[in-house]
Length: 419
Length: 91
Image (cartoon, rainbow over all chains, first blue to last red):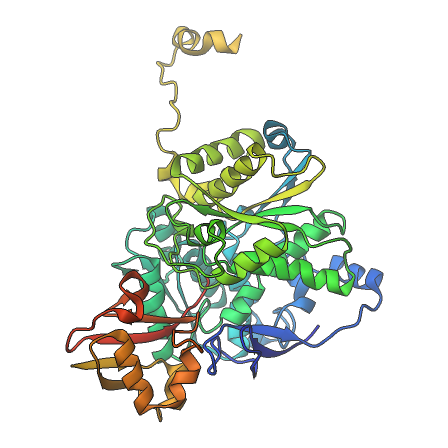
């Protein structure tokens, strides 16, 4: 399925596979278009994927690289970069029982090299950036992307520039600077950072801004979450996926991943219902969904879920359309529901997620409570990042038992509970 | 009243390569009309059939998205800077 061209999602204009991201005719976003591919021998294609590496490059046939997956094939390309993806899909039967669901799986993308799903998109964007000859990596980030870009650039031996809002969690700032990246802390929110970077990208054309001029390639990396879910379910589809929504890019690409494999016949069934998850303090897409609109009115974010704090979500209109077409929806939850979601997931699955994961869990709980999930449904919950990155959200949520180092003190504090 | 409009790289083929233009107008709408009068090709690229802006076009007045102000009816002070940028997803 070779990448053939870039195509405008709005007007269909076509462009070469270069560092372009906006249609010059109508300003719509550009997306990678692939050469048509016949169904062929499905079993052989599955075997080829299964024989691939234990990372997202097993899906290289469906990704927009001209030269195939990066590898140590010669001295010019000896640095393959950080391998991302192939994260665990975990049966969450205790959480399912708590919520009254039959079958629930957690796709734990915190198990990526820098502990979020952003390693997927950066792996693809940086590989394509190297093919195109760029000399530096850069991004506008709410934190997780900055971590991924800084680490990937370090692995590849490229300089990096990471632009973040000044109020970001300390863990996410430290997790970027440690890789030797140039951290630019911007006094403003993510939407200000994104606007600034869009201007900077126009002036520094030798930099690969992974989520701006590399965006058509970058966003394709998110399809691999859908591919992995299908493969890990034994080449079957879930009935429903819960996906956190910031800009909406992940949501649209999870849909595209399932759609491409359905079309090829690699999996059969119907497109899963997709439910978007937002925080009430930044819910432009959920608001538009509730109001029956097909566009998003931007908002000023105010939520603990900073990795989802994008008030002006560029893929919002597409999320609205896909949520409606798949029989899903877009919901928003409060900060206290987010904290409760983090705790619920941790206590029932052993997975400690960041605030964005808390948003997904809380939306799943809401859907279950409202009876919107069928009794026989197979549900996949996307956990996109690690709880160690947003420690403030859970600080003070429990008390340790501080005691003197004596058996008597221990018995006094916990003895009852131990017996 | 004279306003500076910053043109993104993707639109400079319609402005003869110019990265900014000076336009008169009291509102964002008037400034855009003035801009379209100078560079006719810009209108079909960023405006829709109803005279509004296409949905992936963001316009900022001194750094603030005009959708937080009064949209294209937002009044524009003399010497202000208007920036046109494409919407970009991904964080």
